[in-house]
Length: 632
Image 1 (spheres, one colour):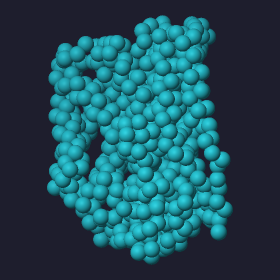
Image 2: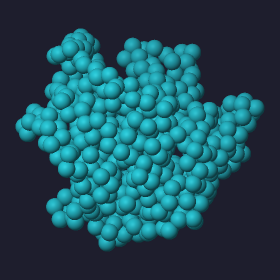
Image 3: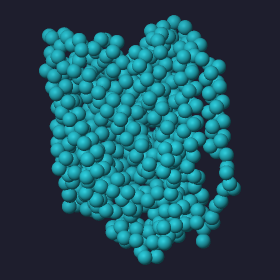
Image 4: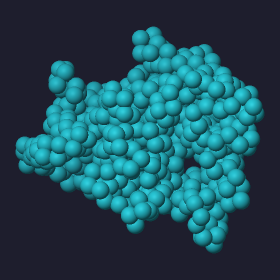
């Protein structure tokens, strides 16, 4: 096992040689597709999510160009509707959650001292479904019928009466398909964290990123079914003339809103809680001291996820619901700020009593706190029903959601990228380019999105195609456009930094930041098997307190430990599956079934559905009897 300094004990050299031979995969294109290595798939998740982020950024750039000046005519109203819808869908479903999941898939086994995720092949299937679902939705632009009813897709405007084309079918079927990836990925994270932690890593010693990833995964499991039901009902209404959301036929448009926001508001916390966990790893490292209030921060993380399920109605205050119910949901919406405040106070106190090093990851972490506080304040404002009634459907809400999600999540992701990328590729990102990127992104973001609050207070509605010159909104919109382009330039600097680092970055070493958690015990980049010997943990910050010692090598087969849920007592070692191409085949068959449903070839969809099940059976068919080693 690598020591804290990254050196191998002499006795470990032979173990490493045997493990390298055992875990080595063939270097062919098919093998590249078939890999189930959590690190390779985690990086693919991150790279693919950033590719969609670029696509969403291009859409945003066109939107801002359209709104930069009054009476704009850069694109048609129909194209504008498709652009702002796909921008929202991309950022919410194809970037924010997948990129955070990518970090989780890469880091969780390393953080817990395991060699793989609990279900490696399921991880491969999850990635390819995510990729193909995104490609499916973006293929809508080739037909000129991209989704055009907003990322929330309100009925009955999205029903057959008002949207007869394929636009909404691309949205509904694409998100149903994507939901498979999200759900199985969340289940994989839950089982891995609860059952595969290093011996001695009891639940109170878990790094805070594990708490946020676990909370995110549980929230996904309980929230996605609501969206799945809503999308299924919408497709039944569009294809088979059901009337769930049509008032004239006895349906209710509010039913869609309830189902969507029962999913949608927990989703807001799903996409920022992992970012808070990342900050809880970055800040102690650069403050050079353990996290203050570790247990309170873990509890606050879980509490935020729980309360997030009880505040969905604050998206519906303007729909005419009873005043008493709105009062309760308004109170709950204000209450959710308390656990978030606990985390912010813990970060600030940690820095106050530490010796802060202002490296690039720390700068982005500090910016996250600033943006998230601003977004949180405007969120508490909208929790007050009288104010919300005035601000609903104005650009004030657009500014708020960008500060909470874009400001919070993007800055958190950039902090994580600059922090963990040296571990992932073995080379250091440029600090000079990193700090240049930080200031461009920070200034550009605030110049771009803060004026949206002002435009909203001046009465500018959201989702409008253009506006008259005498509206009073021109200055705010021009400022927002300039800021958005500066923000984009800053992100391009980071993109160049990443590309440059792959070829010219300085070697990173095992632990370049002097961090405390187990992932820095492995080489940079880690070996396919992560650790030559399984680590045994005895403290919360094992690399700072000499709280880790080498355990068994398990170098005869592909093995990883299984431990008890609470105390992480070693129970046995489970054998991990080999690579397989059948996860790719199953994903492609499922995509073909979805495409057939899009054009209403139901018999063909059924045929591809059967092929999907056959691929799953072949994937899961045992090639040898499973083996389990009991603890010694």
